[in-house]
Amino acid sequence: MPLSNVCGLVYIAAFGIDAGESLGALLSSGPVTPALVHMITDARGFTWLSEDDFVNHFAHDVDPAKAKIMFAVQQALAGSAFGDVMGVPAWKSLPSWYMVATQDQAIPPDAERMFAKRMNATTVEIPSSHVAMVSHPNEVAQLIKKAAAAVPVAT
Image (cartoon, rainbow, N blue to C red):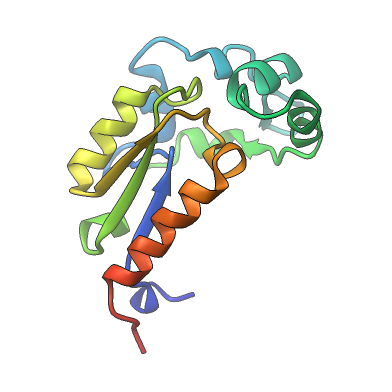
């Protein structure tokens, strides 16, 4: 979808990277979080979470059987993505909403709060792991509905 048709942005326990920043630089600016301690990069340069870190830290508030399924079908991140530098982020020009996952073990909750603050995002906090959309789907849906109701539909 072209950005001009987007009315607002909703971030759920996400990185809010600013112009000139990279994911790798942000991750290296503090201690490694429990969910990312044992990241594995395969021979093709794709990065994966270990099963233990995924189940017990990334998705620690999800039923363990479901978290193991999520682990099995996780999508790898290209290792090169850690060095990609952000251009002008969309949140600079669009209204934003941000859900801070206060029990996130992938992105520190204080970092999430910092991202939300610099975005000037409407912010809610929820006691959730990194995958709030799985463990707290109703709260996530309510935030999306609130954001959708707050902005006019672009045509």
